[in-house]
Image (cartoon, rainbow, N blue to C red; front, side, top):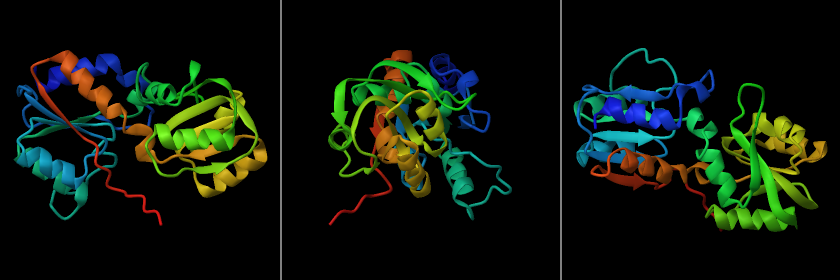
Length: 256
């Protein structure tokens, strides 16, 4: 299977039509799009450490959730982090591709995985018009939001979350990654609580006064599970491909 063929295969699961207008995922670099893919490294982000590993361990493809290329590059030199990574990948003959908001929105993608991990049933999409990336569903029974916050910590393997709100909750909205712009849509969908990767201090203060509980659980923690889905898609496309998952976080949470 070639780089192009693998991109087409995963795109059938997460079509480009599902992407937000501002997104820029897909193939970021591929010196030889018809090059056979035998070794794939999967990660949430194309960090310098991950790119270095992909090159040094002779992977054919670096497959990530977050795009390497978000904004225009004005010069292709080692002076800037994105261009430096591109140069290293091309020089090491490693292709790079990503599946971002389309993978958030896709059935079985980021937010369906997150909803399943957090125990939601009867889930449906929600979000601002044109960006129905999240999921909203029901817990088996009502639970105190402070108790559910501890469940979120346990299920997402994170030592702490930020919480505003009190009382019992039953209907929960989830969104991996940045969720500040989804608070109003979650409230309109009837959610008692929104769990997102990041919401922001002031938006959380407002949410507490608007009648919706909010949990900020961390961008990495709410999305990292999708790496296993990406790896599974590669194996489904070609069982002979060697796939490695790198989920070591770059941003560390330090506690007392």
